[in-house]
Each structure stands twice: as structure tokens, then as C-alpha cells.
Amino acid sequence: MTAEPIDDPAEATRPDALTRALILTTLTMVTALYAMTVTIANVSLPQMQGALSATTDQIALVVTFNIIATAVATPMTGWLAARFSRRTILLWGVSGFTVASLACGLAPTLELLVVARVFQGAFGAPLVPLSQAIVMDSYPKHQQGSAMAIFGMGVVLGPVLAPTIGGYLSEVYNWRWVFFMIVPCGLAALAGVAIYIQDRSKAGSNYLDWTGFLTLAMFIAAFQFMLDQGERLDWFDSATILLCGAVAALMLYLFIAHSLTAERPFLDPKLLLDRNYAIGLLLVFVFGMLNFTPMTLLPALLQGVRGYPDSIIGVVLGARGVGTLVGFFFMFWGSKLDPRPTLAAGFALQGIAGWYMSQFSINLTTFDVLWTSALQGLGVGLVWVPLTVVSFNTLPREKTSEATAIFHLVRNFGSSIYISIAISIALNSARVNYAEMTAHARPTNEALQFQDSLFRVWSLDGAGALAGLSGEMARQAAMIGYLNSFYAFTLTSFAVLPLMLLIRLRR
Image (cartoon, rainbow, N blue to C red; front, side, top):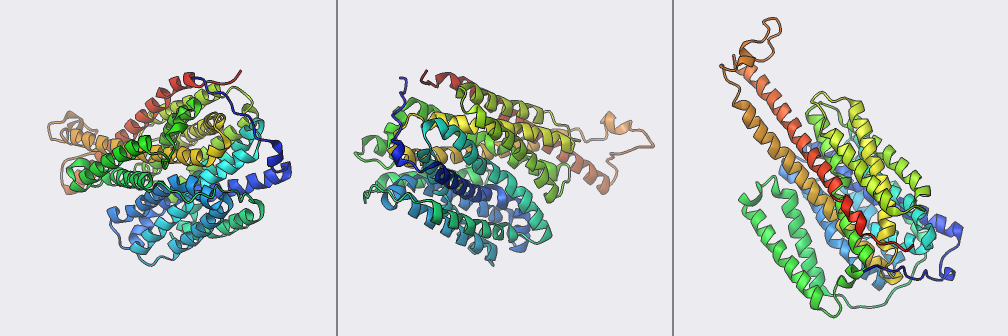
């Protein structure tokens, strides 16, 4: 079916132009504040591990439980906004998020740090969906593209700027400052919300479909834990992973069955009857898969293969932010164009960037990473605005809060799934290639026998020579693993292009 646009709400219900600009500025800051925490902790994980005397598996819980808390709390956004009003939830969300960030920086033990990260994820989960819903409701249809171009900077640039600033602060001071830096930003955002966000409307309903919420929350928590810990626990050779997989499958079945039969389900499946919104969910799932994957792989590649320090890696990744800014600035004008070619161009640019990344040599230069990261960032900037406009253009206004919660839940879900897949590809490929290389490290190998006598680099004579050769083989194998992950990234980027043909627009 072809979805027809709904009538635009009366202009009398919208704030004036100056108020809209202040609301947009405030909510962009709120969004950037939360988005920073997506990647900021990753920069300092090695420092946290040493300072808190934790193992690799234990320190990974700092990231894992934050993601799980965010994923579980995000679907509650629609009900919370209807029950308590958007303004109330934003005030409590920003306040709790800021206090939790301070608690993260002050945490004396790993256990307290993990608990603080759980609260940080739970309080921060409603911020992005509610902010997007308020921005879209504040602007008429013909201005939503330009507004979302500004708002999208907070969504996408936060995770880009955070590693740059966080890497510098952690080197100059210590890991606690990556959380302390959030506190003044949180206080500024709280002041902006208190002054400029006046949306106190609420449905007033006390009803909550607890069956739907609990089954969805348990599915998300079990599946997310399985993804985050699967590689460390050797996937389905682990009883823990098998249990998580079984629980996730059962809870997903119960959630779907209940949602299709309940009179008032937790998440309304009728939203999927809107053609553009359903296609938008597929596209934002793939967008989430592609968005942060290079940012996850490149720091490990640059540090492990090339020996870059944290501060330099942060600066290099900042090139992605430059490309994203260019994309958003283009969308101030490009938002008036047919969104389908722009969407296709954005995904294609990410695919091209992924292809060139898959051609990196082991001696890649800083410039190689800079321009490919900027190209991928440009693709992100071109995708976000038309994707948002297409997905929500034909939905009724009263469904915006619930629809944005699902939209961002799907985006985060795609990110977590694909990051786990990319890391698994890289690690498994590295192990396989290292095993193949070691089979050739034998005295009969002519490459070892006929090295120039003046420049004899590799040798099997002695433990030191064997250790050096083993280290180089591990480095080469790791590089092959990263390249295979970039190949998968490229294929995913191009595979989504046919979906553009399914989008229907009013002529």
C-alpha cells in the first residue's frame, strides 16, 4: 500500500520561531550529552582495568551492562511520556544521568562502577527518543528536514567527539575524567530543559502492559548479554551463552504472540502498517549496523597493528566527525530534495569507504584512515536526515513518542549486533590465519633459508627469534581479520540499496 501523509497539526499549537530554535538547541545538546557515553568509556577501558585490578572479562561489564540498561529502558519511553509528560521525563532523565555520570567517576570499585553505568544507561535511554519527538512536533512538515539536520549532529557527532576529548583527558589526568567531563555539560542541559521545554501534555493513563514490557526487556537483556559476552565465552560452547540464547528465543516468541493478541499491547504492532515507517525501521537497523562499526574496529587496529597512542587515535577518528558535519550542512539544502537518492548516496558512500578500508595494507598511514573515515562520516550525515523524515512523515502525531522509542531501540540493536559480528569476524579470521602461517614456520621454508645474509630478519634459531617471528605473524593475521570485517561492512552497505525502491512519496 502507499502511505498517505497525514494532515499537519494546526500551527496554533506550535511555538514561535525563536522558541523553536531554543528548543532545538537545547535538545541537540541533550542528545549529544547522552550520545557521548556510547563510546567514551571504550577509550579508557585499559586504564580502568589496571586501576580497578580487573580482568578483561570483568572490565567489559562496564560497557555491557550500560548497553543492556539502555536497551531495556528505551521501550518504556512512550508510556513514560504519556503518563508523566515529556518535560518531566526529560528533567528526571538529565538529572539522573548527570548524577550517575558523577558516580561513575567517583566509583572506588568495579562493582560500584558497573552499578553506576546501569543507572547512567537507564536514565539516559529516554533522552534521545523524547528529544527527537519534541523536535519533530515543534516544526511543521516542510521544516522538519532542516531541523533534523541540526538535531542529528547531536546523535552522530557525540560518539565521534567523545573519544577525541576522552582520550586526551585520560592521558593527561586519568580515566575518571572521561565521566567528570560530562557533569558540567549535564548541568547546562538540565538548565536548558527547565527553561525552554514546556510540553506538559500527557495521556494520563495508568495502564501498562506488564507482560509485553517484561518479555521484551528479558529478551533484550538476554540477547544483548549473549552478543557482548559470546566471543569471550566461546559462543555456544558455553552453557551461559546457550542459556541466554534459549531465554532470548522464548521471550521473543512470548512478546510477539502477546503483542498480536493483546487488546492494548506494550508496543503497538499497528505502527508497522505504515509502509514508510516499516521500511524506515529496516533502514535504521542497517544504519545502526554501519554507524559505529568502523569506530570500534579502527582504534584496535591502529593501536594493536600500528602502535598509535590513545590521544592520536582520538584525533584520527575526529575526521569522521568532519565528514558527518559536511553531510549535515548539505542536508540544510538537500532536505528539500527527493530523499531516496540521498539515502542511496549515503549508504553507497559508506560502502565505498568500507571497500577502501578493506584494501588497507599493514603499513597504512594516518592519511589513509583520515580520508576513509571522513568519507564514511559523510555517508552517515547524508543518511540520517532523509531516513528520519521518511520514517515519521506519515505517522499520526500522537504516535510520535512510541514510534521514536522503537526507532532508536532498533538502531541501537543493529549497532550492538553488528559490532559483535564484526569483532567475531576479526578475531576468528586472525586465529585461522595465524594457524595457517605457523604451519609454514619450519626450517624447510625457502623464504627463511634464502634471506640476504646482511639483512636476515626472521629466523628459527633461538627463543628470541621465534618470539619475534610469532609476533609478526600475529600482527599480520590480525590485519587480515580487520580487513575481512571491512569486507563484510562493505557488503552490508551495498545490500541495503534496493530497499530505496520500496519507499513511496506523495507527488
